[in-house]
Image (cartoon, rainbow, N blue to C red; front, side, top):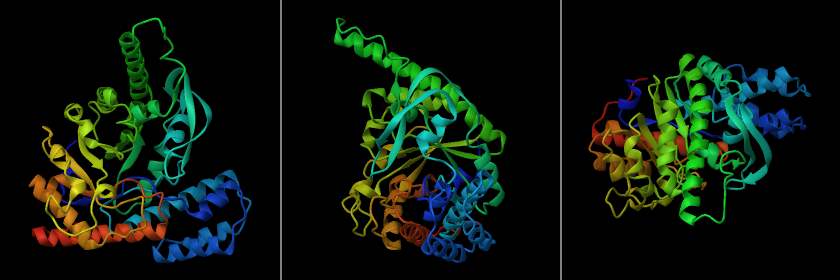
Length: 396
């Protein structure tokens, strides 16, 4: 897809998830709301200039809620999250998964072939419900259509839609269908070969029978930018070829801009495997978590960003979604620190059009207050970098 999105210098956007407001979580779960919850909804509505937010306050005062009213609450939460990102000045926005249960569970619950097996810990004391594949996989119903249709009706900025990738869904699931032919009498090398072949079958069936039709449905509604989230991609370094094949099988010849988000890892592991992901127009990668908080644009002052040279040298020249905000800390990066991280990346790439600016990962582990301050300083730092580079302001 040819778009101004992937050619705009220092494009800013969030990676995906935001925390769900307490009023949304409690109301949806049927729990009583406190005066503090109502005040949170009122104060953020006023602060973010959410249109008609008084209607939400009135709704929250009239529990219990019907199924239709709970859908309204989800949409209000989406609207607030969009306005938070737009208020922070981001070029490309999303609602932070306000209408989804969780990135894995939401996909699996809209699929055929899986059965839930219980909750497991992901990170930062966040949990997800793990499922097992037990039957042929297929799409029960497109599971981002209603979300996208609402978001496109209320977003003032450009939209990006994250989806969970095939490899991560497989990696976070129990396999009770494909990898069953284990004979301990066989040589270990043969068992490893059979395991990898079963793993490939599992992952590619998810890509072709679940992810791809869901992407096609989104594109049919007008989605222009789809981010494939793959936090599990580097779990097994010897399976990176399967991850690449699954991405390609999911997006091949589809008419949209595709990017992928690779969560915290040794990013050196992805090379040379990702040289075959030519339809990936941007890699969003976390670096601030590994970096110094000192100012400066030298190699020594930017230790967390040394691997970006490998992304620069990919033959199909994708953009790099440069993580400049540590999402594991309440530390508020200064605009000057963001500026220097951006300037370092531009110096390495020698092309500001190939640098996008993002948090390291989704900000759902931070409060809205901290997330908003981080994102505002991120856009302020990008403005400083633009000035330093002599770049024009982005279009309004």
